[in-house]
Image 1 (cartoon, rainbow, N blue to C red):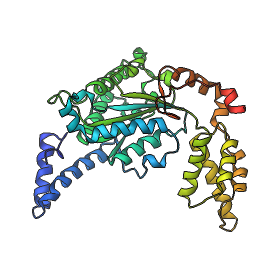
Image 2: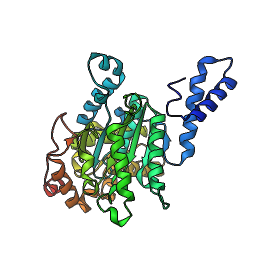
Image 3: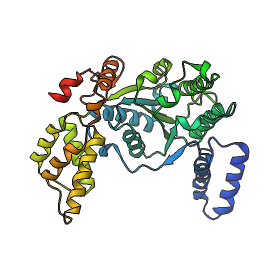
Length: 351
C-alpha cells in the first residue's frame, strides 16, 4: 500500500486509502491496485503526461543490436536492484535513462515503447512543448508537476519526446524572460538528482529522451550523470532493412521468398525503418485492392519508388549529424560498443 501511494500528497493518499477500504474490504489483496488506479487517473487527468500501454517489445524492433544489448544489461540491473545495492552499488549507480538521437523514422519512439513493453513497466510520454504556458510561473509549475507525477508512477519509463523543440531557446533566456532557461534548469536538476531529497534513494524512473536535432539541445544535457548513455540511431544497413521488412510483413500476415527480401533490402539503401514500413503498407494496399490476394515481391518493388527517402532530401543534415555523433555517441546499429562512425552521405545513398 505504501509503495502504491508513492508520490501522492497526504490528502490524496488518505482519499485513496479510504476508497480502497470501501471498495475492497472483502478483498484486501486488491487494495494496492485500487490506490495505484487512483494515481493512474491523476496522470490521465493532469493534461501533462500521456499514459501509454505499449504492445511492442524489443523483439518488434528491427536492428539496433548494440542498443538492445545495452538495454538488456540495464534491465537486468533494474530487476536485481536489491542485490546490486547489497553487493556494493550506490543508489546513484542504478540506471537513470538513455538519450536517443537520430533522423526521423529511425525508431526512437518505437524503442521507448519497446523498452517499457519488454520491462513490463507503465510508459509515460511527456511532450516538452506541452509544459510551456503563457502565464508567469506556469511553465515552471507544469514542469515540476509533470516530474512529480512521473515519480508518483515509479517504477516506470518516462519518454521525453522531441526534447529539442522546447529546449532550443535555453541559451537565449532574454528572449522569453528566462522561462526556457528555468525549465531547462529544473529538468537538468531532476535528471541529475531525481528523488535524492527523500531518504537518498532515487525514484525508479527510467528516462528515454529522443531528439532529431542535436544542435538545438543545450550542452549541459550531455554532461555525464544526466543519462547513462547517448545513442545515435543511423539508417538501417541491408541486414537490418531485411529484418524490418520481415517484421512489417509478418504483422500483416504476409510473407515473400527469402531471396526476394534480400534483393529488396539491397534496393532500399538510404530508407529509414518508417519508410520501409510505408513501402510494405502500399504493397499490401495494392494486393488488397486487387481481389484480396497475397502480397508479392512485384508489389513491394512497385511500391518502393513511390516512397522518397528523407535521406535524399536531407542528406546534408544527416551527414552533419553523423559527424557530430562520431565522437559523442554510441552507435545503436551494428556491433555492441561500436562508435557512431561517420559515413559520407552521398556514397551511402548513391553507391
